[in-house]
Image: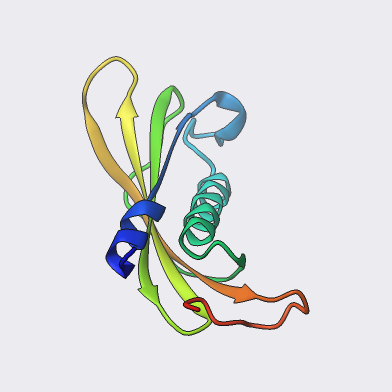
Length: 128
């Protein structure tokens, strides 16, 4: 499998409904909840790419472009965007979908860095 094939195969898509228990007093998704969901998708993407123990080392940038209202569906998409020796970056996008229409728009983007670790919790090479 080529590197491009591995990147394509590791793309991760998760859908979630935005319920009131995940929203703030403005009836929109808590930013911290969005970040939690993004880190989870990024982790799954990194693990699917490397098939190794991966740990988050940073969330490099998260841009909240649109509020995510309660009663919508969100799709989170994670893609490997950079590969280093022991680390990689995953870009994550959150799209809002209205439940009863086909309207869809990008709401949040972010990038997460991960490091592969060995059984001694030391960084190890991703591409072996």
